[in-house]
Length: 365
Image (tube, rainbow, N blue to C red):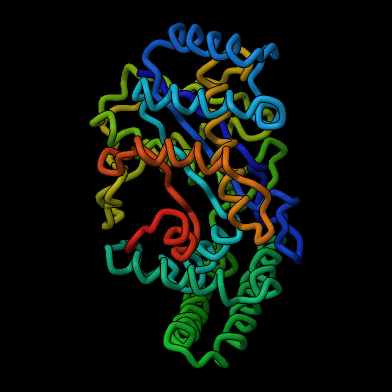
């Protein structure tokens, strides 16, 4: 089986957002993958749907489909369900990803505690949720600004600002955050004495290098791709040597996607200590990665439809005055009903727990 991938929502560096955390008007990112063992058959089936709905465009683009032929999108999702294609969707709330990054880098940095367990992951999720809901945008933006010319001094000043804010909090989680941040600031001092000017690297996300040799700090597609890889590994029971990942062509981030794949394949999953329940990061076989233009692959086009529906659906539920979302809600309902978390298929939300409860009734982490 081959897996076709496409994304929706700008995948740009989250550290380049503005003080209002608007992310260029695209606060949500989604990456979707679909497993297909016969793309020619899929092409024939989609051609029948084209004729049914009088869709004449050579390339299926969701933005145009939703505007002119929304029923086509629902029939395409129904096709996925009917044929039991395994699918894997990651939906990323970009502000929440920043909250996770603050938690991982500053509140519970791995510099002196490199392994994780179920309890520590639970605590990290609680902290990330709290930061998302309670930290003012200017506090979160201070974290973003620190990644522009990072240094020990700037990271120390960031700790001061975070501690100054959290020390006035009186609830249990807020007080715990203040304590953890004070300890991390001390850890930065210790690391500075041991490692000198590069100590800050333990307390900020690890950047990638873009095509123009620039540092790229937080890309939502990096974690989304690696987690989908791990979920596909679980679903395929580790049998990936004969599989291909066919990703929509990426003009700016193809090399970073390739880097994410190589990082995943070189990972010592046992050293992580924590094994997520709905994915398998212990790769024994590796898939091959290719990039193909969307109009050249119906598999990629179907992945585009899934990614676009998912991104727009979550975005619509962030909007308090959202318009009619019947098509989006119905599409996600169909996908939800043919998901199976035990084998990694379905929708993974990188979002606050309260939003998961609201949308899916999810219980626990």
